[in-house]
Amino acid sequence: MIFARKVWALLVGIKDALVLLLLLLFFMALYGVLTARPSPGQVREGALLLKLDGSIVEEPAKVDPFDLLMSSGGAAKEHRARDVIAAVHAAAKDERIKAVALDLSAFTGGGQVTLQNVGEALDKVRKAGKPVIAFAHAYADDGLLLAAHASEVWVDPMGGAFVMGPGGMRLYYGEALARYKVTAHVFKVGTYKDFVEPFTQSQASPASKEARNALLAAMWEDWQAHVKAARPKADLDRVTRDPVGWITASEGDAAKAALAAGLVDRLGSHTQYKERLRALVGEDPADDTPGSFAHTAMDTLLAAHPAKADGASVAVVTVAGEIVDGKAGPGTAGGTRIAKLIDEANADGAKALVLRVDSPGGSVMASEEIRTALERFKAGTKESGRRPVVVSMANLAASGGYWVSTPADKIFAEPGTITGSIGIFAMIPSFERALAEYGVKSDGVRSTPLSGQPDILTGLTPEVKEMLQANIESGYRRFVGLVGASRKKAPEEVEAFAEGRVWDGGTARQKGLVDQFGGIDAALADAAQRAKLGADWHAEWYGDEQDPYASLIEQLRGDEEAGGPGAGMDLTGLVATRQQASLDRLLGDLGNLFEARGAQALCLDCPVPVAAKAGGNARSGWFVRLLAVFER
Figure 1: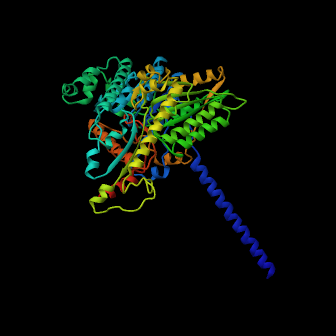
Figure 2: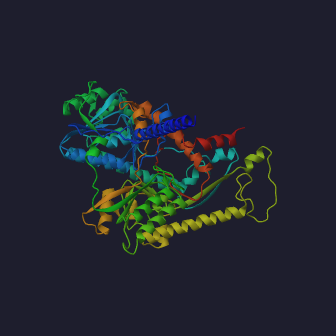
Figure 3: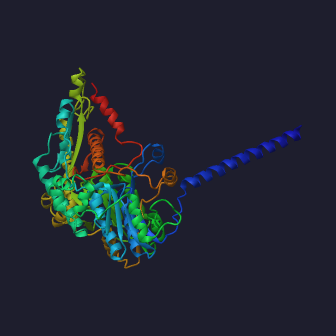
């Protein structure tokens, strides 16, 4: 019996070991499936299919893959700008690529500078003797800015092309907050620091309108100049001067009106567009669907043309989106996360660093955390000595976006960059009047004027309000001092272009906020030259780690031909999309007031697209609390 029990125990032990081994193998296999990215495939002779279903951004936002999988509607994608540009450059050089198919069926836009950079890359394809054929169901400003660089522009007969221009109305909540007896305590410095105006007033101040008119005029002029240069036949004056007359002249047919104004070249369905491409580059032998043509996807072409990786390293760190405290991102500029990336580049011995900024600003504390990390990098070590830091501004580098730029040895921007907005503010709402309306009063004993302060339910004491304003004024003086030291100007000289005012890139260069026009390539070359690296260097981008689960979720979701947000739009669809954007802006505005935040350096007029999320609006948590406060 003893022997039998020992044999049985041995068998049970073997069984348990086998089960554990099988479970281990199962989870290893599952991890492999989840983390494996699809094979990029082979570059095929034909067209580069540039299917921009979503927006083009400097840094794609992190999307929860499980929210994406569980959502009923497809979330718009975000394409990294430098990947799109690199693929287009590769298409110009690769002899296997005969054309570029620019499919904008579900394109939702991008920053003006970013789109101009993509357009310049498309020009290189055309200079190489290869056609660029664009298609969309309907074009708005962003789509037209890209399509203008195409050699042939198609639009669906049920769609059209519409030039809206920058600007528009925004909401002001001063009277609404007064009605609900919510007090918005505002502490700010800067005549033009108008971020707080929607919460205290019922209309824009004269100073705000002055700055906004100047900025939008410069941006509009820059947009028109690029479109006219790329597509001289486009009659923008006719389209924008009398849009109703322009449409009615074609009996309300927006597609024919676009053709008559030279905004497009051909009217046709998506299938007819693909048949045109098939005639140019040949059919796809592996696909018998109507209009199939031989093509290579963007990821495949990028894999076949890897970036240079030898020589010394010039680090690149991206500050994209609102600057916030903590580790948020990518797609949002978490100060702690970005400072850590800069410190990693420092520890890795990078010879120089380029900070790519595309941000409207945000938290002063987070901005300072990033700035001090840059100063640590510049200081270097005994062995390395001081190392250069160069800033490359994309679409936005305002307020906190300029704060983080102050350590730069040189600042590059584009004429269409929005920058400046040197000013800071803080907002704290309080509800003592709203509570009193319901008979809720406050009483108590304080040992000092600061006891229990600040209290959003019983209000702020005069002493606390004075202290907060003094603190904001101190922060503003620090901001002006940092700009003065960076730009080699006295504080009174900085004040002449500070006060919270935003500037276009051209004006900013005239005023000394920017050193030179140029994109990321110019900034990288300048950093390498300052580090005396010669031609033996490469750019190393920090913070580019891929989500290990993204590839599997994309495949589970992924009908390549399915349209996402923006697919199949006519004029009515464009209007509906703008309505959704207005709702998102409303929720974002109220979130700015009711979320707990410290001092902010943010720009009101900086157009920041809402990150594509599958799991609903990120503001929903505070919105529920807001409804509870206002409910009667």
